[in-house]
Length: 125
Image (cartoon, rainbow, N blue to C red; front, side):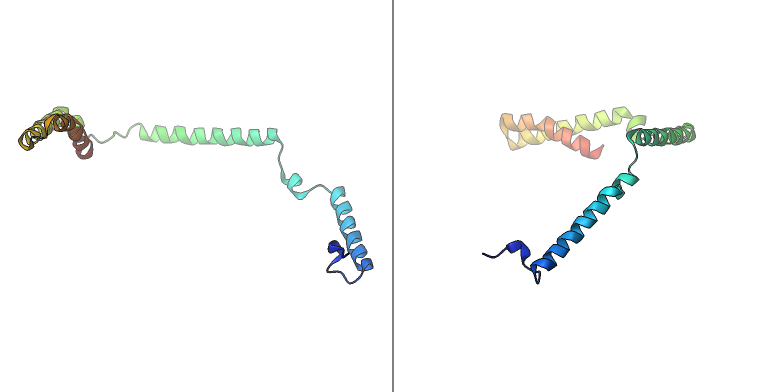
């Protein structure tokens, strides 16, 4: 029978040397801490860093709010004349209703008029 694990080595002594080297590397790595563990912070340190970052972001946000308090938002047309939007919606609904009557679509067409008017209203306003 062939020992599959020994393939690739010239002799069993060569295999044994390789295994000894691996054991030595494992022993050395057990003595020193892993590099990932050295760079890790404790949970308390991470929480403290996050709290400091949150405090910094809150300070920045308060300065931004203070700067924008005096700036007024632009007034849109629909805010100046809300009745215009209502009148346009009513006119659209009336016109669509008349079209449905002319086309004789029946009850299903009449039920669709408010939905179509709402969709048009959303797209235009």
